[in-house]
Image (spheres, rainbow, N blue to C red):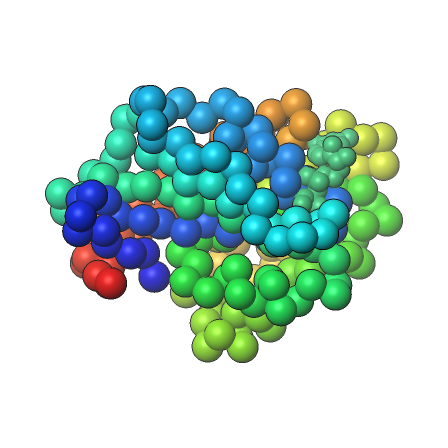
Length: 204
Ligand SMILES: Nc1nc2c(ncn2[C@@H]2O[C@H](COP(=O)(O)OP(=O)(O)O)[C@@H](O)[C@H]2O)c(=O)[nH]1
Ligand SMILES: [Mg+2]
């Protein structure tokens, strides 16, 4: 649930980038951090939260044209999770208090089992936190579109976007920053829409 910071008059919204190892989650965060427009002092450092090669990363920022909900400026907190199977406890921790999710899939044909497994792992970890993916705004990003062995997006949709309600999906080549901001803009728009229509988020 988004958090209201009364001291700074900010609404903090937590977005988690989820997906299989090596799919491009960290690359997305680095690209956003490098290119997002903020005024001075309104972008945090990119912080590594865990010790391992497959790290959890975090930073927050207040967009240059800060969106206001009920008098509060919206600050975005972006997290990645470690994708490797062994780091499931970390993934559960990072998902606590999540407001929106970007699922970064690896478009390569041979990565489909890992994509599907990671998506199921997301559903399971949310369930263990008593959350339901259907209640949380999320988007799909089909990354690594530049690679010759990328599967058609229709196939990725078939595997990952086959629920009753389809969610927005974006093609991306994250290391060239293609599709990165399209993805982020959509999830932020969905979150703002949710909080504008569903009343004020929880204050802590
Ligand atoms: N060819 C290609 N490589 C990418 C793309 N996005 C990320 N990578 C590379 O894939 C590797 C794994 O990316 P990373 O962001 O660390 O994945 P993570 O494990 O999901 O955080 C890195 O070597 C990236 O440079 C892409 O769109 N195309
Ligand atoms: Mg990573």
